[in-house]
Length: 78
Image (cartoon, rainbow, N blue to C red; front, side, top):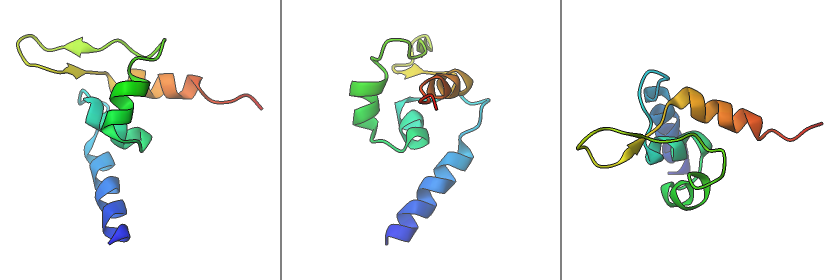
């Protein structure tokens, strides 16, 4: 059962491209965290990329490239 969950997680990441705006769930999949952790701990962090609001549609979206660049900046020094 655990292998099936891991396969589903891999397939979810394949579906997410840099051309598609990410929501909090996509960010959670990329970071391998829960959606609630992303919403409560990651998105509010200072320096996290600003969200895009899509008019009347509720919810926020982010540019994948900006999120990935933010993650790279967190890398610990040698």
